[in-house]
Figure 1 (cartoon, one colour):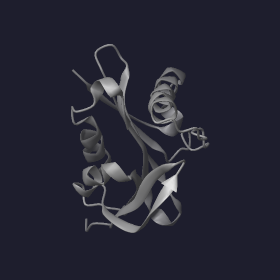
Figure 2: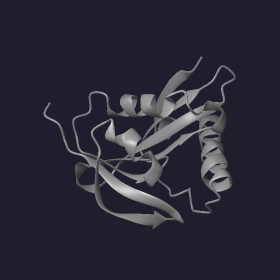
Figure 3: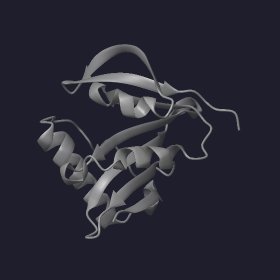
Length: 147
């Protein structure tokens, strides 16, 4: 069984932040062999919203964050699922939770292979594919919706 959690940046406990950062490092740095500066100073911002699933043992299984970018656009990022939890639809459930009831514009930089996931939620690719830390990405945007 999984449990959905959410917190604003300053509400995260040290243990929660540690578990989230560990998952991000396990997947992005170790598994994807991508050395990058994950600690960008935005996780604890007051407007940053975190959503994650834990398993019965409390381990973080999937995670994403939503940042408040300039101009009123929300940016989804750091979407990640632990290897042991893949194929369960957790990333899709996190996306649904993050977008539920929010009418504003969203943007994200999708790893190219994951564009289909985001397209299910109304995101449309824009611009050219680009490399970010050696991994092909594509910017995707979901326009604001009427309230």
